Image 1 (cartoon, rainbow, N blue to C red):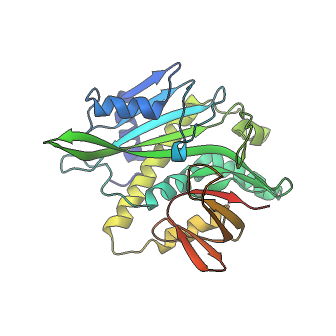
Image 2: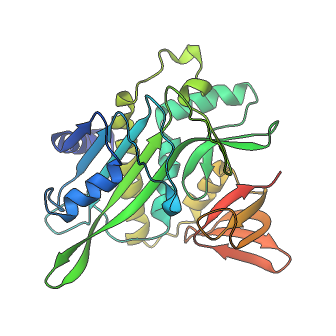
Length: 297
């Protein structure tokens, strides 16, 4: 299924029919995962879970996601593709994460903001490997995080073994406010902090549910194309590296869950067709499949 506007309207209707919203929740990803695993929600259908507030949000590598008031807390479950279902995940690869970040940046609201920022010679909102969205401020030499993505596989018991049934795509985005980050490799920003009056009224978190889901669906369809066609991912990788905030910068990579474990540093060359980060140092070109990247100042 090509995710054009007409087809997405059909998908969105299905998603809305399976949308569960909470005033407050521990974590949309955790709750959606558990309800699918327990069989309370069908693992063969799309499901959306959102919340006004979450108290135990999770980010990449087991980190907590620091929440702010009026933010997007969204998790979309997408099943594996089957003969009876047209839309779904056909297979896994490291490109899925990059594609989701890529299409979130291509949302109309972010595109419009970047067009204005370009005319003002301000840094564009981009992607920091693997799937953080934000801006790199040259003056402060800091990465300011706008949004993060957490993608998790869902396994359920089938015939005495665990089977992969789908993925949960979690998106957290600061809208009204940015939380204060006491420590870490970045600071936080929000749509409100980056907003321009010429764009009209600032959207609410609820206004962003549909475009975020559409971005995820576009990423899944593009991934399906890359996995089933004879074409390579070179074209997409070139486009991704153009909006990738680490490309051609000196970076430090932490391969454990915090910034105190194993690390390596060097010049980021971008990402390759497997979704891995390429870092050049004295030992040559290093290929990084997992970890946390920090821009060196």
